[in-house]
Amino acid sequence: MQDASILVLEDERAIAEMIEIILRKEGFLNITLCDTVQEAKRKIETKVFDFYLLDIMLPDGSGLDMANMIREQSEAPIFFLTAKGSDADKLRGFMNGADDYITKPFNPLELVARVKVQLTRYMKKKKAPSSHLFSCSRFTFDIDAAEVTVNGTKEIISGRLFYLLKYLCENAGQVLSKEQIYERVWGDCLFDDNTVMVHIRKLREKIEKNPGKPTCIITVRGIGYKLVGDVHS
Image 1 (spheres, rainbow, N blue to C red):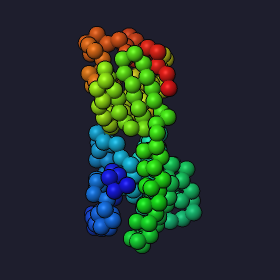
Image 2 (cartoon, rainbow, N blue to C red; image 1 turned 120 degrees about the horizontal axis):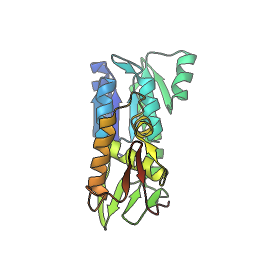
Image 3 (cartoon, helix red, strand yellow; image 1 turned 60 degrees about the vertical axis):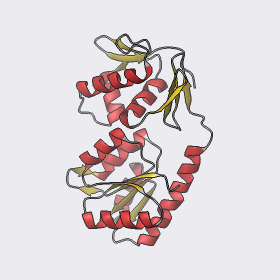
């Protein structure tokens, strides 16, 4: 469990550093601190986390929106750690995907205990034999291990590429518009065509024999993309 990766989104530096210290004392060494929503989004694009600890009131957005985006892409535990302590606030937090809700000021020992409970459950589930496996003629994608195997070679796939391939596999054979892909994978309705194209290209470089002439992820001109082949789970 100590190898779990934890993201802490907290704009009060003193609180963030205290959380890092108490978690490190318990053996958790893979901790990423962020103080803005945008910084957290950038981190999530390049790394898969096992636990999220979020403040709600942040300088450039809301932790609620962040949690909603995370929950659409991951089953990892999400905790809110916030000064907003009304029943309505707590209900809103759980409705946005939180597994627990802790109000400030908080007891550090209680926080650690709750983190351990949720992480233990999640890591056991994560390390259990995989039942989320997609296969086709070109590659095998193990969702639980975040691992893609191409011609016998295994490679960890993380960040947005993980969620992009997962979404394509779950909708194999269907034409997906760039707008659909962006909203589902990035959790944002402000469509960015170039972002989708760049990530599709990176994914093709990982799974296609010839990325310049793709046979798995094909372009449907004027619409978007489609994952073709006999994909089964």
